[in-house]
Length: 134
Image 1 (cartoon, rainbow, N blue to C red):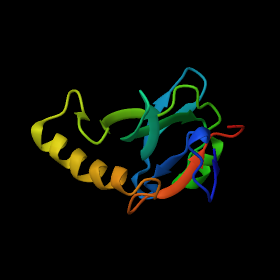
Image 2: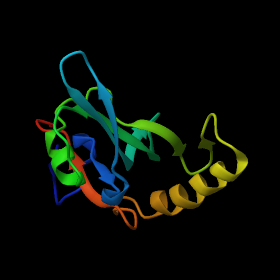
Image 3: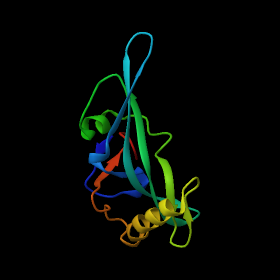
């Protein structure tokens, strides 16, 4: 991924919460691997409307990192996008497998995010996009 200063929706950008980087260790027969996830927020167009999304970006690497930027810079496969946990379209909240309290928290985050489109949400760093996005 690369960090862009300007929001361009066609580049499918993500804002990320740099301090949310999580690392899980797993082992293959020949080496150690690390599965990383980082909280992300993004805007997309859906059925002609702009929607605000909250979820995670994931990747697996053999290198061990403690900071988010090198993990993001090493992400090259954006074909699956983010793992969306909640989406707000201005009228409806989609948040399957969420408790009522989680849904309330999601709406409290996503409502102002959509109202302030295309601003980076507070406490997030943006905009990150997969290399080669056009």
